[in-house]
Length: 392
Image 1 (cartoon, rainbow, N blue to C red):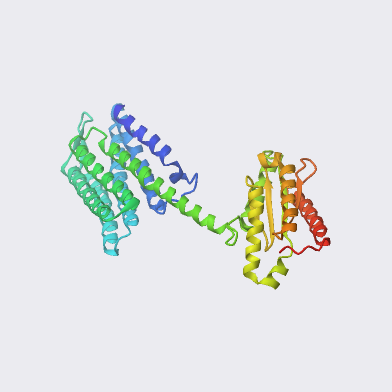
Image 2: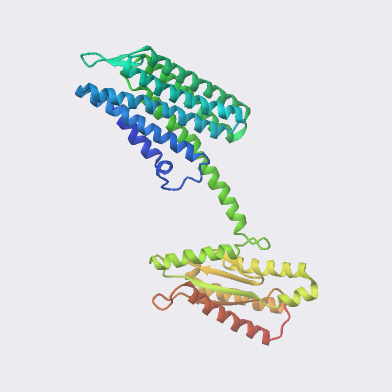
C-alpha cells in the first residue's frame, strides 16, 4: 500500500497544481504551449493511475491483473516520454531537424515499448511473475529505462546550454526545464535499480511541479503584463491621457453588472462639454484647439481627482463619482463651476457641466443617470452662451 500511496498523492497534487491547464478552469491562453503540456499531464495521470493500481494489485496478489496493469504501466510510461519530448520540441522551437528528431525519438521509444510488450507475452524479455507472484525484471526493461535516461539527459543538457546563452528572465524557463530533465534522469536511474520503489512517479511529479511554477505560471504572468500594457494603450486617449470611449463602454458594462448584482447603489455621473472649441479651432488653429481640450481635461481631473474621467467625444468628457467624490459631490461640483466663473473673467477654458445621481428603484440603469446629467449640461451650456463670453 505504501507503493500505491505515492502514485495517489501524485495524482492529487498534479490535478491541484495544474487544474487550470488540465481543465481550462481559468483559461490557458497565457501559456503558449498549453496543448502540448496538457497532453503530457494527461499521460502522467494515466501513468500515476497505473502505478497506483500496481501496488494495490501486488498486495492483493491477483497475478493476471497485476500483469495487465504492468502492461498499462509501461505503455503509459512511453506516452509520458512521447508527450514530454513533444512539449520540449514546441517549447524550444528550434530548427526543424531537431524538432523532427525529438518527435521521432519519442515515437520510437513508445513503439519499441509496445513491441517489446507484445514479445513479452510469448517470451519474457521485459518482465514476468514467478509462481509466488514475485515481479522479476528482465533485460529489456533496463534497456528501455536507460534509453529514456539518456534521452532526458541529452534534452536537459541542450536546454541548459540554451539557457546559458540567454539573458534576463527568458533564461529561467529553460533552466527549469533543463533541471527537471536532469531530475528525471536521476530518478529513472533509481527506478532501474530499485524496481519495487516508485521513483519514476516521484521524479515525474517533481518535474511537472517545476515546469508549472517556473514555466507555466511565469508565462501567464508575462502574458498578463503584456496584455495589461496593450489594454492600457487601447483604452487611453492619446491627446489627454485619460480613458477613451472604448474604456467608457467597458466601464458602463461594469456599472450595469454591479447594479444588477446589487453591489452598487450610490454613484453620480457628470457630463462635461467644452464651450466654443470650434471657434478656437477656426480662429487659432487645431493646435490651439488641442491645447484647449487638454486644459479643460486637466481642470476636470484636478477637481475630481478620485474619479475615473473619460473622453467620449471631441470636446465631451464624463466622470463617474463614487465613494469619497460621491459624498463630496455638491462641494466638488460647486468648486468646479466657481473655477469656470473665474476662467470666464480671466479668459481661461470654459467647460459646461451637468451632474445627476443614481436613484435605486427609479432608474433602470446607468443610461438614465447619464441622460439627466447630459440634459443639465446642455442647460448650463445655454446659460453660459447667453452671456456671450468668448473663452480666450
